[in-house]
Length: 340
Image (cartoon, rainbow, N blue to C red; front, side, top):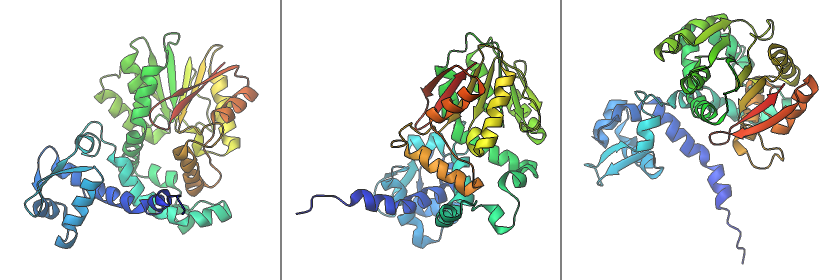
């Protein structure tokens, strides 16, 4: 008798069902509509615009998936957010990560349908495939769309940036420059915990007003400044530490090396370069999310890819860095550190 269980195969094969239910719930604002209250299924369905046919199946699936709680059974049952949903999926929560899920639903869900073509051709399967502007070109053309995208990325990065700010020893450094700083989130998290540190958030010119707004809202304009430039055209601002949060994986090896060299040139002896990514384990056997993220880079950019700590060490060693470490952060992510 065959004792091998096909369960993991079937669970993975059908996982797009549960993914789409959660992504759709966020798109429809289910968790935000509930907030801190309870609602009957008919009332909640009407509030988010559902046809009656799907109401109980949709909300009860979210209950079974542990994203909603339900009190009672049948038509009179009351739905409410779980603590997890209330904290991370209600748009009014300061720890909201739903922007990331909205982006996944609006863009990546359909692009991943073309993974076979990406694997066969090595070419991106995003907007550029259909004759539209590339993702960055499209985003940077419109400030509201750019700010929405950066909000989504903040949701993806916040837990890692908080973990880095808590785990890394900043005592020997006085200045930090965050490259591709977006909303300034990494600088904000680090500055909150390290009163002695002055930070610079560096990004393209259209990003500067967005960063300044977020830095001011955090009450940290006295210790975090902004700088504008193109990190492939301009030298990086000099600082004791250079950080790159989910930046290196966006590029091919040639451009990765350019950024690492630029960081080396901007650092003093004893300075540190920090790359925060879903770092793939050196044996490439464990970090499923990191490996899938690298496939996502194929779908988004073609020649971009994620990498291991050993890869980072090799590239940084070629440039002249002399000491290295990897600091585990939240979930599948880590900070790869190279010291000059």
